[in-house]
Image 1 (cartoon, rainbow, N blue to C red):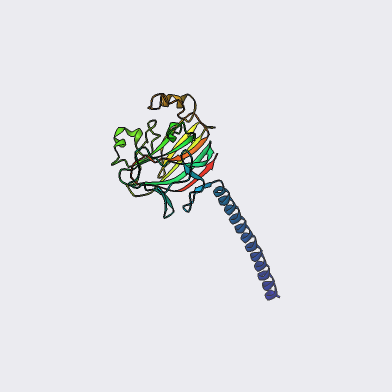
Image 2 (spheres, one colour):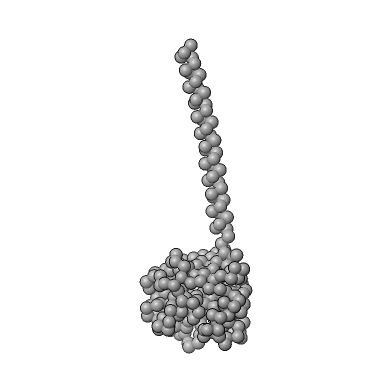
Length: 254
């Protein structure tokens, strides 16, 4: 009799353990599904602007196909102007689409003596010779060898050009890729630059704060500079015969 009771008790315990194990498995699957859905949702918030395989979504400013000076190399777009470049001949790239509030994520790399920039709020109109006539710029620069770096910290890599200097220099050596994230949010009046994981620049993007910054800069008398909340994103060709590179470009609209 005792043996039979022992067998019954063991069987009950075994059944209970199996049921608990099934419930735990269900919980684990459910948690995994929720986590996967959340990750997918977060990733779906981003739109790829450059996937490393084509220039779809981009054109040369102020209109036309991407020129041969821009190359596709190892998943990056590289500006490699040849010796036929003439003075004043620029190959600035702009997005086909316009943006207002967003987070822009990309990587950039410079060679020795290189100069470029990332602009937003760009109005594409032939009356503006360059994108920077309307679009504010986050500086991309070789801080060591380019002479503009000697014109003050508001001209160095990561700066809101001629307006706000980076809080610290976190730029990687020449030839290495820098990860940059730019937030422009007119709803909260915030502009933020994070370079290689460090927040280096913060600024207002509209209102009295913005107007005061511009009034104290080289752009004070530029009629249309920084006046358009909605515009295109531009990657600058500074006009020199030096290579720059961009890759892994994506945007999240806010």
